[in-house]
Length: 126
View (cartoon, helix red, strand yellow):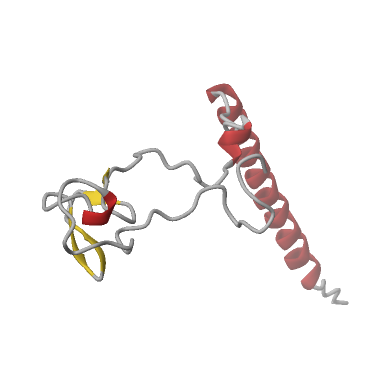
């Protein structure tokens, strides 16, 4: 909020690439001549050559390699994620395997009990 007015959406404005008013008969590296032959040409409005920018082509074209508006992530807040120690992984794997064996054993016992109850004894009088 320090660097923008209430009606501005962002603190910085887009860099103009030419478009400034100029005088076709002007000479030198002034605003009226669009920075001179090296920087730009005057065709009703300034048109910048490659490597120059601004409304009158007086500023070298540059860039900032840092992405200042990068989206926030959990690591930006100091959260690096959970890393389980090897002992915990082995213990969890062992308990899971034990539970799986226990379930299979219990299921097998229940199935055997059902089969045993299906048979009926025949008592005969001989």
